[in-house]
Image (cartoon, rainbow over all chains, first blue to last red):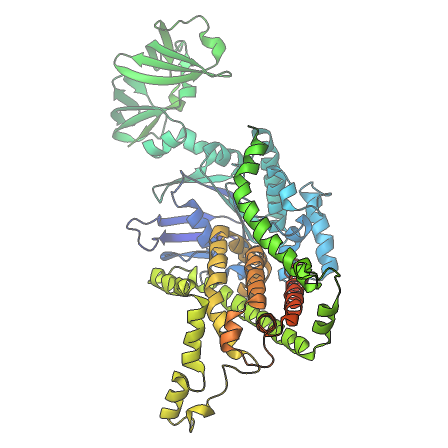
Length: 346
Length: 285
């Protein structure tokens, strides 16, 4: 049960001119599962290593329950980090790997054996204790790495790209396992990923880091509905950014005057909306109706991506394939955008 | 041409050298050690050479001395090499220079090193003279016997000096390919620095240390020139003893020299076998 507070954390590697991480601040409430999301090289793993005490920050602070832990050695912080490539000790059996943390604490061997058994049951690999890690599949190694971390009952669990090395069908299994274990044990958990989908399916809250700086820290759905800026929206698959001017109630741009939801920003800015929120057909009340031309149709299996043009403005929409069966490329397509799906950014 | 045939042909030159020179030499040595030399009319093999080797007290003294030299130099240079590799893998200013200096004596021949040791450490050597000059000892000959001494300190010194960079370079490369992530995992699981070294890094670099130290052991057990230059007359190291027998004016001593060479080869193979078995269990078990 640990509240993790990261304050203005900065890391400049020796010889580097730009900081790898620039004044990152985050509050992670007790027992929550938080994702640090960002492209490779944005400082996510650096952040993790600094929380774990494996790397010294250039400036800033890491506090657990209000107390700075920067002076604590890594083995005394109660933080366990699970690396992306699992790093099971290759010369030890699976059981010895899982029991490693307890052995280092000089726990009684009989007790270690009992708890290793429990952990192997928990990750649903009860019969693999005698094997060597090299005899396990990637998914199994991942679960053993998780068991090895959880057996020491850490206050804070750090996961580096926990799902990225797994096949699609294993990802959901692993996701469910991580979530259920994390909630059962109430461990404050932080994981890093470059995959927005991984962040969204796993985390309570997501912190987006771009260029070493935190862009936004919110529940996952907010990134889709109300991104802070274009870079954030783009990272989450946003495509439509139309410059214009907002008066707080309507947005004046090349598409005409579109009605905005309550709480929208005033002044010059860009209108953004998700491709999947573009509706086919006109709205009966006549609100935010547009007439588009279909420039291209890209069939993606369960969805279809449309490249549209309204006047000189290009738009993208993602629709259900059935909805546009009778609309050929080059034809006209009436669309509308419900006001709640619109959002203004700077 | 089939792949198998190609591989066979490609390996042929190397293999023929190994087979002809190594096994051929071994075979001739073996035959002569059994007093079997049809060319000069010896057609009845016997074990008399082995009998006289094993009944000679000097052989046992020499064996103990040679084992002491090989074992002590291997252990000391392995430990110091691991320590050096631990320091050298860190990032620090001037690492390149230190690394270069560390590996420099790999290029110096053993003989040159031995002569250096002789000049520096013998009782008429530079250190002895300096110590006398500064009044630490009365005469240079009061300097402790480090060369030609019964404990073979000079020989061990030479081997340690020469083998640290050899083992160190192998271990350092090994550590660099392993990276530091395993140790990070161990630290975050609650292992102290020492525990991390003992339970994680050491077992990971162990195969490299093992093969390097086995090479050093085999070399120091069988090498002739260093104990010949820096060693005492009695007991002499086994290879020195074997060579003396071989060059004896009495040709009848030759089979004994061959028997001794065979025994050296078998003993070092046997000791390496036990060393590998035992240490593997200790470090990784």
